[in-house]
Image (cartoon, rainbow, N blue to C red; front, side, top):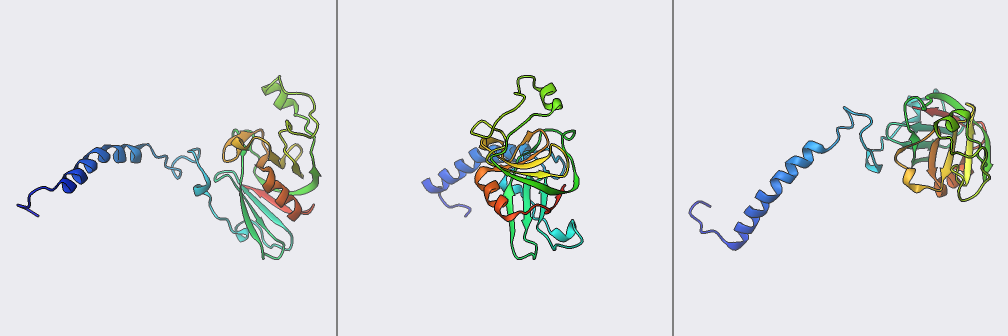
Length: 193
């Protein structure tokens, strides 16, 4: 290479490398380290696959694990033959996040919404009741958990999925909660991590 006269192609490649190098270095500096900062922005590529064995002693019934860190809901059929993963919205803050074991106690197509007293305290403009429909933040379907006021539900506001945006619930796209709704019976075991 030494002593070879410069060609136009070589000069353009060298110039492009010099121009791109600072941007590449800066991009590496501003990328969030999700291992060091669990609140760093995440997207679908940040999903962490879960194993039901890491959370429950046995299957035997439909199982759900909602991962609030990677913002994904994991579903297993009772016999383990079907595994699905869905992107979710998660609670806004750690204080609103409830972690642990629960189960599905009720299912509802076209859920109505009654904001809790603490929700109305945080936002006094919330209605006292909202019927099912386009404006309802619970979307088209809801799975009620044994913890009062905690649900897995749909949302009409698709911008919320993948973000910290709820008052404690786990939200899915309406088409995906409709699919999950058909698969999950009352009594399904659930863990929020």
